[in-house]
Image 1 (cartoon, rainbow, N blue to C red):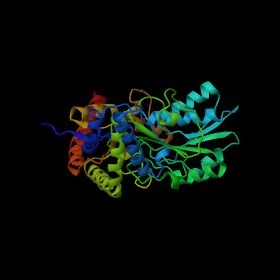
Image 2: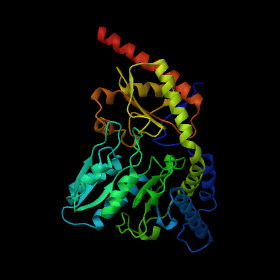
Image 3: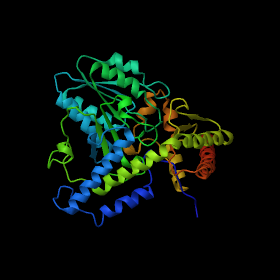
Image 4: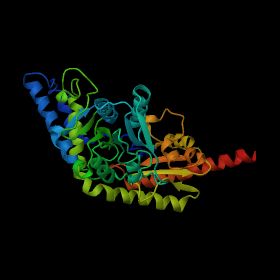
Length: 389
């Protein structure tokens, strides 16, 4: 039987067994609507409040500052729509980066096309990191929002969120952070980071899909994205996904327990991967660096091949990786992140993303490398024969 190795944890993570167990009662006996005025509803509402506290604890927030959503994209859109439109003035201005997730970039494009906002897109350096001083230089009197992700989903570059937060706080400008790839990987304290809002997604840290969270600092005024029955203090109407929210809460608690050791473990696995790959294979480059990128993400370009061909062959061997962002995997465009980092067309087309998870073992890494090196050599051999033919 072929061994299966999952190395696409930036796309989604496997459901933690403890999370699964925590959700089951709210799919079976405790199925009540949290808005109902009887015991089944009370128990569901109490479970949501407990999950709110668990998520808040993980990021150093107050429980009342946590709003549950359907995922990271909704959390981002709530702020991208809610803050600028609440403060709408003629010629409003937003600052973001060229390497944001499509949930941010597409929302900015919508605001530009439909409401006339001006968007400034900041370029990163060659390692995928944005300079905080570029944010300062881009500020205008009409700037209403700055939004910068914490860890990039394609290359793992870590952004200087605290420094950007200081600049925005000095100017009284709302600072939003897409932290979907950061929560559960690094210490996140919303007060130390000086963010006004922050988005998270359960399925990136061992929780279920279809549930996310939005931190909004006390006192921040914004328009709700979804209107209806007034759930989530009137800021996100709709009957709550109780089981999903409970699962998110448990995933947050378990992630907090793993935090003291998780980065060191990821570094060990990353270094093993790079050391063994260098010993077995040449003509490849790392689209990132140890200094700038979180160790769970490795974006590598293999000279002489196409990333999609390598991914397809790895898939046949049950080694699961990505050629970019899973949330935009149907796009035929070149990676906007690698383009912004100055990579060549050939480097981008030959790129593969490996993302390590909390469940990944050294044996997984070594088996994936056995398969990977054999396939790269095979693809290069096939390419050479085609050229000679």
